[in-house]
Image (cartoon, rainbow, N blue to C red):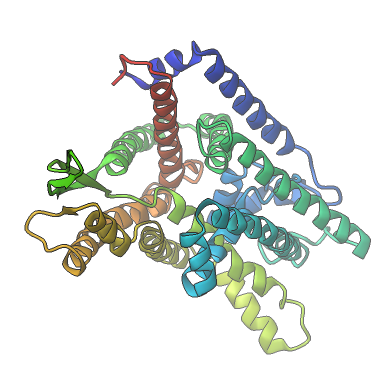
Length: 432
């Protein structure tokens, strides 16, 4: 059954209909917040910045235009995502955090989530200050920032407003997730991307010439191919057969069944791309702090770093490498072959032809690494697809490229699955 029929079926259920309306209402609140400006920064001087800088252009898309509008939610959910990255890294490094996550179950995860929220606040302040500092020093585009100046009090007010906007979005995301029909943070990013479609269509229409007809047609074909590829990779999986030996407990015979362990090609989803964007923002932010120091060598080095991350070739290579690396990293965090192997063995199961225990762990690790390579390379190519298209076509108005398509399609697929699960819980049948 088509996706829209599933949503129509869910819409007929009063409880699910109420959840849909709540989610739509919260997303509309996000769109309203995206047009509330931060006082003290002229928007007119920033029009060329986001058109000429690929990284800030993508961040602006994910914030739903909040960055180019210099709204109170100009940072989107970026600081929260960065805080999540830091906490996941610390969980792998610090034994106490790893024990808290694995052994204390839901209570431990709640503590880690609370620390992630607290870490979001200083990270939001750091990113906001860095971005404003870049604007003030004109490091992004020629003499941009020449008319932007703050007193200390104005700077404090601006930083507090942006920090409050980030915390507000984080809260909205959690409220959306509580409804059970989609991940709140992903839906906020999804809404930010979709909200930019009218602007992109308008730009394409105003710059259209008959000579570009072939280019736009090719872009449409590539977009359809990307969507098909995203669906195929997102839904693709390797099924590992698992058999369970027969066991006798009292008067009952247990086990003796065969099932499978599904290993998805892209277990990380869109998280690696979002992680990569968050990390790539930091060098420019940190370097901006040293642009005005008295030491000329440090100032020149900072200027070189800021300029380096505006270089499209370097940006593309770095983006690709980070996406591939984070795909492996996130997969290793979410899928532990040793733990899976131990659970299968405890339940009396085994992979046919593989000894339980260490050999099963090595086999699962081998399979996961091989299929993750395909998913990682696919994500990396999707991430730099806009750069490739712009290099061949020379058209910069086609901003919403592979990354945005990947996120949109992935969020739709994930939301569909959650809607299906909600329908299944309520014993609705007749959908496939």
